[in-house]
Length: 321
Image (cartoon, rainbow, N blue to C red):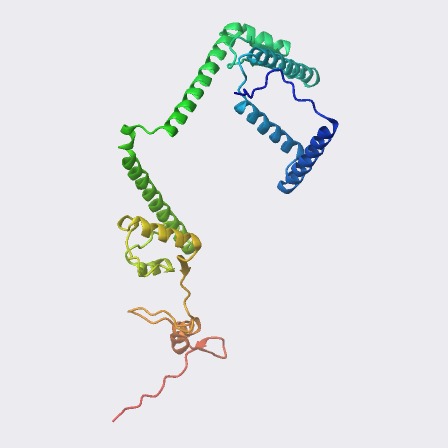
């Protein structure tokens, strides 16, 4: 049996042609990555960083070192981590010299608890952490224990999810129908709520009345808001969504979202004025004439020579036989 594992970080003897082909392939990949960044309108450096992050995640998730190289990996990992943290600490110190900012960093390694914690940053920041209550070495140990517990919980949950997906216990199969019905109920409630909100918002938007409510059982009564409902399917009764089936509510919601069901303003035709039981509407000119005709008939006066108002002579009385 061949044990396929990386032992000493050595590769097979590579000839010059292979390296040239590999370099050409890498250049082509970078060109495609640059073209992708341009299409997405994102910086090329961001795409490179995301690609490196994805590749590193792929390596760490799929690479399982053998027992012989675990010690070497741990030592190299600790060295690289410390070098990075030292560089970050130097950057913070430089930032303090330039802008006067004070800061500190505390780093622990929950995956390798044997590694020592790292405290860096400016002098004021490090002294603050050392003098802080529950800080210093005690605080670093507490922080490491908290992170270690979080890592253990993550691994436990991941193992539980994998085992649950691979095996289905008998006692869980009995609850499958119950969970399905509960999910179906939740879906029906969500559809009904979405239909209520969609109809209400559309009605208030078109009518301009903030407290308008849908007339579910009598759509003709919507004329009181100056609107009419268009597109309601004839095979679905005019009922409240609580009285309809899930399929009917889903269909109504789809029609509402596509604009088939909508509210439209009622436009009054000027040539056909609205009438009521008590009076018939009339135009503004006729209304003005009718309102002031009595004044023109009864209050007509004629100026006299001396400026006094003189009423017109009375009409002679004619007796009818």
